[in-house]
Each structure stands twice: as C-alpha cells, then as structure tokens.
Image (cartoon, rainbow, N blue to C red; front, top):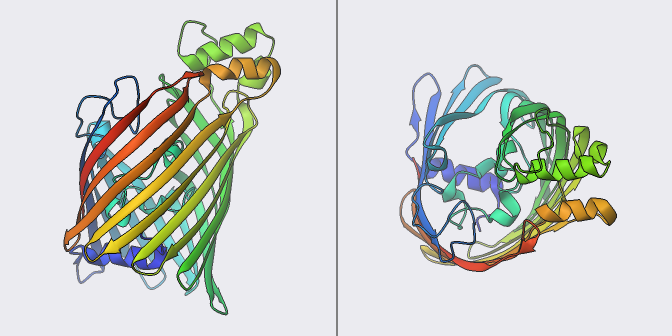
Length: 373
C-alpha cells in the first residue's frame, strides 16, 4: 500500500497533468475503469454477482479549486459512478480558511474522515487494491460526506510529525442497509482524528459519533428484513429498543502503517457501537503487505468482519440480520506509464453468516485501470 498520506496527496496530484490558469484556478481529475465477476451466484461481494459487470468499480471525477486570496480558497469535486448510472454527485464543496501555516478551517460539504484512506477513497490510483476491502470500508459508504465544519492543526514534536482534525456536521439522505431504502438523519455528527508519522512508520486513531433518526421506518412482517425485525420487536414489546429516535451510534478506528519505499504494510481496525438494537455492533479489520519490484507491486491482504448480537430476546430478533465474513486478496499493480496503473486481483470471499444463515464462499476476479490527470 502507499501509506504516507502527505506524500501520497502530492504524488496523486503531480502524476496527472494539472491545469493551472493565471488566476489560480486548478483542475484535477481521476478515473477508474474496472470489471469483476463472482464464481457463485449465491454470494454477493462489492456489488458483484456471477455475471461480468463493468459498473461497480468504474467512476470519473473532476476536482476544481480556486485560491481566492492569500487566506481563502474554494474546492469542489464532482463524481459520476457506474454503480449509480453515472449520476453526477457534488461530493465535496467547501471553503478553506488558512488561520496560519499550521491551521486550516473548512466549512461546507466535506469528506467524512472515518478511515485511513477516506481522503482518497475513490482515487483508485492512490492504493494498490482494485477497491479498498469492503469488509472494513464499505459499511459506511452512504455517510462518506458530511455537511459541516472542520479544523485541522498540524504539529511537530521532535522527530514526530502529526495532525489533529475535529469536525461537526449533519447528514440527511436515504440509506439501504439490507434492500429497501429508508430516510436517515444523523444529527450532532462529529468526531476527532489524530495522525502521527515518524520515519517510515505511521499511526492513526479516530472517534466518531452521531444521533440516529429514521422517521419512515415502520413495522412490516412481510416487508424488508429491517421492517420485519421491527415488527418482531413490536410484537415482543421491544419497539423502543429497535426504533431509532436520537439513539447514538459510535465508530472507532485505528491504523498502523509502514513504508520504506519498497516494502509497505497497513493494518486497520474498526468498531461500530449502536445504542439502538436495530443495528448490530460490528468489528472489522484488515492486514495487508505489499512489495514493490520496479513498476510492479504485489500485495496480499486478509480481512475480517463480524457482527455481535445481544443475548435473550433481543439477540434472537437480531440474529436474522447477523453477518460474518472473511476474505483473502491477492493482487498486482503495474504502473506502466505516468499517472496510470493497471491492476489484477483475485479475492476469496468466505461468507460464514449472511442474514443469520450459513453463508457460502466464492472467488471474485477483478481488473481495473486507474488514472489521475
């Protein structure tokens, strides 16, 4: 993996042909074209099935930034994803005020800083995988942007460089946790991130929380699995425990990285803790090792994701949504020209549990071309 995020940002921006005008308007872009297929029709992974698809990992984006004056700049990013029929989304739209050379204040539509790769989650060129492992990274996809404000402060302490980021905002959109989409609102959505680096080593810890509201969720024993779960809770006299009305959800993340220029390593751990019983608490992690050989990088990754149900009647109801999955990813990346990378990947997916039932396993084969420009 490419792990040091400061140099990574510079590398991604410089690898492409940035357009800069005399008035300090900068335009950058990135694009991924991918394809994948699963070997088992009864397994789903990263949006793929047993028919070859070219949509899930295909996307294109443009980022436009303008330095308005010495202290203030504006940034926006437009993304079109194949998985969403190339509907264009304004995923970033914020103003940055540089308080001083070490402190930035941003306000607007921001990237939610959940993960180590959050800032580059859709820039396929920034990492070796075809896509970040879904067991860790895909569970919070719908919440990847937040409307709010953040403050980032950089610092140095001896040989250690670091940064602290705090943010606060609100989220309101639709959310399909199983099949059907529901309206969801996150209030008091905020958190803090600490990044540290020393030599070839890096570390990251973060904490996030929000108050959860789902106003159109109702009991329906023959409907979506989530509605059926609520119906069971109502019948058991547990509706207050399962209908979220301001219940707090918390997310924890920690990562350790190493990169000496030829050998790189990353391990990342995440945990979801829900006050409402509608969603199961969840723990996931990945461990990945990569070795570079000139323009070729070979990588191996192990991932795990496991839901935890409660005991008693609550646990019996939750069991119908419980999941557990492990996977092993073996892949290679070929940087065959400036700003372009070709990737191939084979992933063994083992669904130990899916919606409370014994799962199956499959191979997911993927290829992609990633560009920055």
